[in-house]
Length: 164
Image 1 (tube, one colour):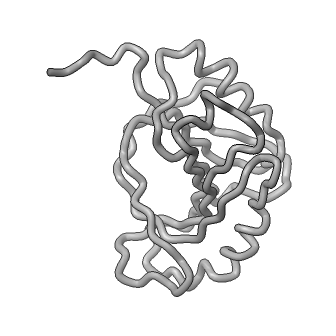
Image 2: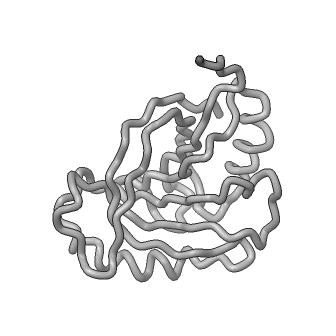
């Protein structure tokens, strides 16, 4: 599976967040809290949902399943003028991303094993310390083997030249 490499522009997001780890994975709780209220966000730019993860800088270099990270359930908005109560804003910084078009069960982690253990080490890129996210569009179906989503992995070049 070969990703497309894309330069992402900054995005404004509104949603809910929850701290978790892979041993205490609370993504269902997060989405159960967010989904019934998503229609309160009235200035969406698209109908897609964005499932975002913010990992601490050492998450992958010192990986343990108990490492905490922040998971967000969001939508992209035009501005932060009307933020529903108990929801938060986040500015997703722009940058270079590998975008994988994934089809399959959202509980199948083999795509992430492929990305981090096969594709990334053999690419001309390394992980960048920016949020990771999935775009859950019209073809996304929770717990369905025919579900489709985009997986966005933040990158920087292995061979970036130093600038003075």
